[in-house]
Amino acid sequence: MTPEQFVAGLPKAELHMHIEGSIEPAQFLRLAQRNGVAIRWQTQEELRAAYSFTNLQDFLDLYYDGCRVLVQPQDFHDVTRDYLRRALADHVLHAEMFLGVQGHTSRGVPLTAVMEGVLSAMEAARVEDAISSGVIVVVQRHRSEHEALALLDALRPWYDRLLGFGLGGAEMGNPPSKFSVFFRRCRERGFNVVAHAGEEGPAAYVREAVELLQVQRLDHGNACLDDPALVAQLAQARIPLTVCPLSNLKLRLVPSLAAHPLRKLMDAGLCVTVNSDDPSYFGGYVNENYLACQRALGLERDDMVSLALNSFEAAFITREQRLAAFRAIDAWVAHSEQEAVA
Ligand code: ADE
Ligand code: ZN
Image 1 (cartoon, rainbow, N blue to C red):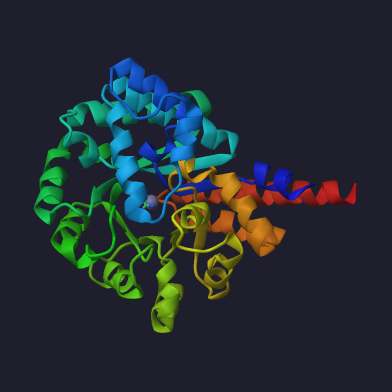
Image 2 (image 1 turned 90 degrees about the vertical axis):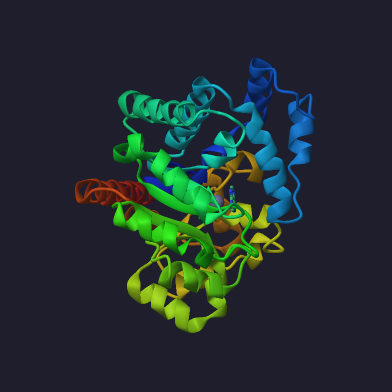
């Protein structure tokens, strides 16, 4: 079995992807036309050529602008449903998706349109494909904590269908401490909490996310390696990192995948997972992220199994779901070993 075949059949969870980052060029053009939204690009090739970034802010400018093609509940439904189909094709059994609600409501799109569009697609995917999914609302850190608190209240009608809250957007100059009251309130209301930290920002931001915000997972978290005491603390508490290798490459946070810290993070005993972040912008869905790392860093089959096991350890799922996923991984490994003997 080739690494490609092994990764293709390996059951996994994806825990760090943004729904708005999964609009494929063809769909982007269709949505712009359907909603009469003027855009700068005419063809898929022009769009792909625009996906070249110098840093996180450079990407976010294009990404937020691209969100304008999402207007109707059906748009949010279609984008979410399409991502979940691609996830299923990558043998993702469970997906936790970020939704940047403020990027839509700030343009005048009703909260109901965003939420009902996404939630109806998740339900359709569960019924039609037996894929489980959850949605994590990610607040934009360049906005105020006051706005985040107002959003938390406005989302009350959907509380029982929300998995949790996260923090995303422009990291530098917007430390986790800016949102300490918001995160405390999310925790008080029983939500899971995660935060992007240590993507572009320093180890001190990772520490703040853990100690002040008390996040259950770190999105990216790469910069923790600059603080050995913090690494030990994360390993001891088994706070998972949702690492996104192709994203880090495209946003020039690493010069090459061979220089990516994934292996160092794993060797430090951390609960590391591999994810796609914004797959249509960064050149690959979750399997492509596994494989690109396998090639660049020489990951062994056991490493890929560890990453998949970690993804279910880190997921916000029930004990039954977790055990079923572990059994599915064991079965796939046994199958691959039988093939090797035969
Ligand atoms: N929103 C979408 N992608 C993001 C990223 N890589 N970092 C922070 N916020 C994001
Ligand atoms: Zn992200």
